[in-house]
Image (cartoon, rainbow, N blue to C red; front, side, top):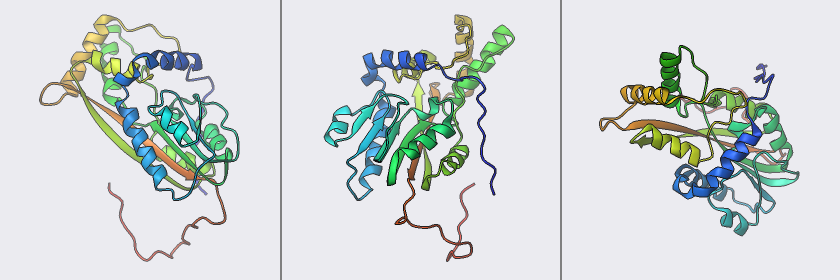
Length: 269
């Protein structure tokens, strides 16, 4: 039997009040920075359209939603970040919030419990390789200027770990897939503006000194040397993980028994 994934969080990693402030501030000019949210929302609506039955008791949970009127038209409820989802839902959609949850295994179990049998859980969150270029550039620059460095980009969950956690939460027929979006920026300031405009500014609970201008300048130089395109623009990756899982029900397709497959395939390396 596979050992469960244990995510140790002896102290809170995230500051909920800081997350709330970040997202409230982002509402002011969100339309100028919502390109990822728009893309992902359309993807989620396509996934919902492929479910060929009514989903009337739906809940969309998250802040900075790009289409609140569409949610009302569908007859679904809307709740803020990480609130209690209730029970007997036939749809629970978590929108860009799970990457900011301290106890992700417990939150996934809570989401599963909120569904009625054969209810569906859809979610999107930022995953493992998101902003790895910025992470490395800041670590290199701060180490060079200050002699040591703090982690200033949050740890994003890897797709393999997320898949295991979704299974352990008790979801049936779980599917995890990934959409990697590559964006080019003229400057580090432009990237920082987008991060803030998405409501994804620093959410960490640990106190740390703000970075000096010399560190930011060094980080931009390092970034441009290591992660720029032919036109010298900075390249940034956003890895978006999608979850689809179901509350167990007798009518659902059952996994094949060992040895019952008609053929085999090799996944890409």
